[in-house]
Image (tube, rainbow, N blue to C red; front, side, top):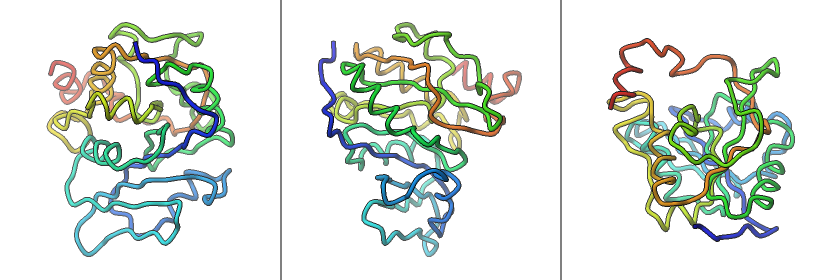
Length: 225
């Protein structure tokens, strides 16, 4: 069982996957309730040469990548992250005013967890999807099936030590366009690391899901794989 603990001064970093950005202005819509200077961000910008994203801010690091695939972006972020606690992020969501304190407080409370899964709300404030009624430890593969990337916060050291990465055959821009979160969390469970669900919202998203069409050929193909 994982016994690593979270200190009160744990470094918190947000790992953002995006594409074809040439300006940091997209961050304003992601963090409308925060001063950007108060956040530590690592942006993976998948782009083409000559259209790089540049940051002149010490707290915002940018890596321009010239390959495609969301899982490749996530893996590059994990490899280059510096935070003790990291949060996976996309560029089309809005973070709540106290999202960072919720995450750090929860890791402090559940201090043997490697991963904590949080909740997404719609812009109207409703649950984005069906969630467990109460906070709980996630033990079975069924428990992790419906997890979205932006719900996942994790201890970077645990992931690095166990060499857990996203499967690059899965995820947007890959051969199978979904399923990468499930496979990532499945590897964590297989290493006997602890995953918890915390019944708290950290982020809002418009009600459009990349895998919402469960009858589509692409979705069925990914789930079968």
